Image 1 (cartoon, rainbow, N blue to C red):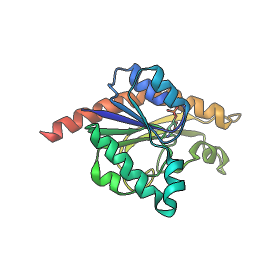
Image 2: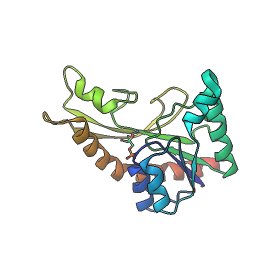
Image 3: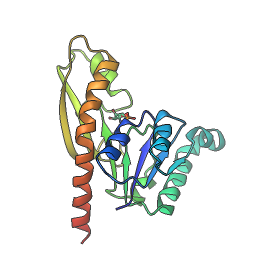
Image 4: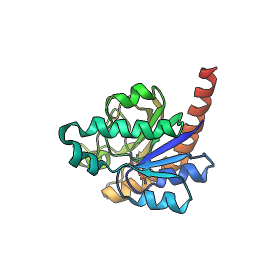
Length: 194
Ligand code: GRF
């Protein structure tokens, strides 16, 4: 199954997929980011669909146009599975019509707790502060950080944790579970497609 990874940041989960032997056919970044450089260094095929460009060009309608451009690129590359690995653009509903049950996301909390772009910060700011958090891998749909949960792990929140230290420990766990979850989901898709 041809697989695309969508990134906006460091790309460490993309790297974990690569390291574990998941074939990545295409990497799409919505901004110039470290992950894009990393993808180049791994000799992965990349596309940069700059969201800023669409925001400036399209105004209020940019999200739909951006999503349309992304769908076009994914279809041009015959992509069957889309993995959002730290992708920070909310896509419009057309994405999930074009790729129903074919988009996975990883989120650094135990959903439905702490959805949104600042999950780790929000976890640390919560009162009372939870002693456990984790990461969730789920099937993505039009509602942000929602959809069928495939895998969830637990990470301890330490009293002296900062956003950086907790993010780093969550990522360590993510790198161990994400490739396995993706592989299992690929098998599931292959079975149900028969
Ligand atoms: C991960 O922690 C993931 O849960 C969240 O964004 C982060 C991406 O990190 N959605 P990286 O770019 O893979 O290093």
